[in-house]
Length: 356
Image (cartoon, rainbow, N blue to C red; front, side, top):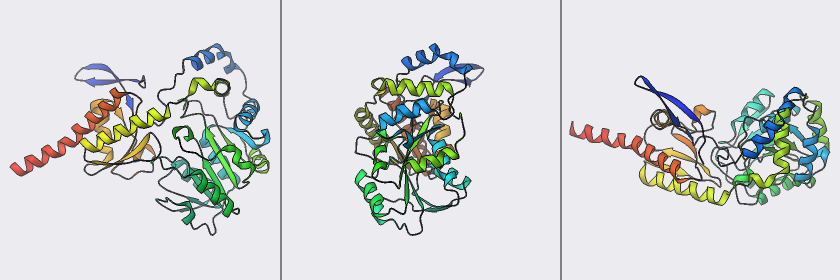
C-alpha cells in the first residue's frame, strides 16, 4: 500500500501529478483507515462540542486495555504532550538521555530547565553511571536507529536504582516482536513512567493522542499541570474507535521486518552505504560518499521519495539517513533504483577524473 499523497512538480511548462513515497515517516503506512474515516464522518457534528476536560472516557478505556487503574493513566495531546508534561512537573531535575534518540526529549527537557547529560551509543544499561541522575529517558524501541533494550535489562535497572525515575517511551512498541516493558509494570516499579501514542502505529499523526502511565501520586501531580481540553473531540472519538476495534489495526510486523531487512540488504549490495539495523522496520543508512541532505534533495526532485535526515529534526549525522521500508515490493525497489543512480554519479565522476 502506498502513501496516497500526490505532489505536483513542474516539468518544463507542464505540471504532472506523481506518487509520493515517504520512507522518512515511521508511521504504519499499511493501516486501513476506511472504517475509522467513515466513523468520524458519521460523527462530524462532534466538532460543535467541547472536548472532555481531561479525556476521562478515553482514560477509562485505556486503563482497562493497559491493565492499570484509572488514576494511573492520563491522556495527553500525543506522546509529545506527555513528555513535556512529565518534564514540566520535574522542572530543574538532572536528566540523562542516550543519543541518538528522540529529539523531543531534548526539547522537553530544555524547555523545563533540566540539566541534560548524555551517554552516546549505549548498548548495555547495566554500565550506565547514574550517580546524581534524577531521570533517565529511554525510547524503546528507539528512534532513529531502532535500538531496543531488553525488558529484563530495564526491569533490572528499575530494581537496582529506585532513586532514578525511568521514563520509557513505547510509542513504537508495536514495531518489534521482542518482549518489551509494559504499562502495567508501574504496579511493581513506582520509579517507572510509561509513555505511549496512537499516532504512528495507527497512521493518524494528525490526531494528537498519547498518554502517560505511572503510580497514582505522579499522575495526580501531572493533573495539576495539565492543560484542560487539550485533545480535540474528533481525536478522542478516533481513539475510542481504535480501542473498541483493535482487530482492524493489526500490524503484520514480521512481514514488515522481513521486507525492510531485504530492502537494507539490497541497498548495501548496490550502493556505497552501511546499513545499521535495529529491531524495527526502520533503520539508519550510513553513506560512505556524498551527504544526506544532497541525497534527500536528489530523491525528492527525481523520484518523489522522502527520507529522514538531520534537518527533519532527527538525531542523525550529516552522512546518515533514516529509512522505513514498505510492506510492498514496488516502492522498495524504486528506492533501491533511485539510490543506485545517486551513487553511480560518484563512479562516473571518478572515471571522468581518471580520463582527464
